[in-house]
Length: 379
Image (cartoon, rainbow, N blue to C red; front, side, top):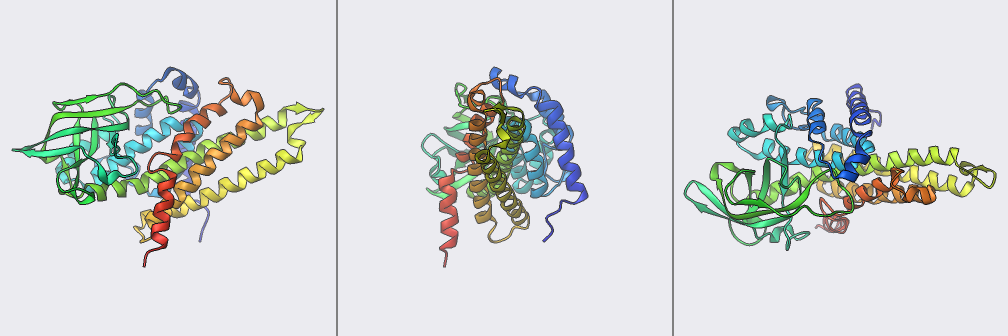
């Protein structure tokens, strides 16, 4: 067991850290206030290979490992968790096309996705099918050379701004076996979008409903075979859970570092806050829990990469641990900053708002516990 990063991994991490410091950090607060979607900066991230981190290199991907990607997302999230998380979702959608689509679809879409000249969204959740994803109702009915889609998707990151929507639809029987995956282009007839959601955080990325009203999509846009959709969706989420966990680690690490600096310079009762043992103990616990979460996430990333039998369980464990601990660390950081932590003039409250949703998306942390328990109780 070697816990040291290799030379390439240190290089990926350092490039991501420098990019985030130069491009995301100076703008993140403004993007948050204005609800600005930073498309130009996303394309700059893509130029460094961050838009296709584990997509094959023949279509412009970086062909890196899941652990490499986790290192990148942690560094990007130190500057802006909202924007880093959007890049994660784009990567997940692109990976699904790269892994399960036929060669024609790979060559048609991925060169643009890896440069982010086109952006992809992932469409699984529906108004009445959240944690119970296999109950989704959006239907695709064959009509000659096309499918006709009817239904809607909820809480879709990038809705209205993205160019492609990797969408899970029902082509067959009830339950998981009747679900298929299809790529829907933004200009497809019958595709529309709901109003932008008003959210607690994640203000640098748009979120809305995706609506299919007799939406016409070519059958050739089917990813894999009919009935493969749920398998594709769940495989994508294993990786997505690693990425969102890494984003929580990055945001929390930044807030821990901000807290250390604040405690050293802030004086009360005639001495620096850093000299108070109670706050020292809190810092120690924050750092310990964060490192434990990071180690678990890195182990899970190696198992997902290796397609190990227990990869899904460890991905769920890592996501649960990293997102819960990430939010706890940021909440403790805000408390350490006192009244200043509650002000938008200080960055901690933005991290708190952005990291809160990580405990909900890519499968709620309650669902993570169900996945873990189900695997433990298998015969």
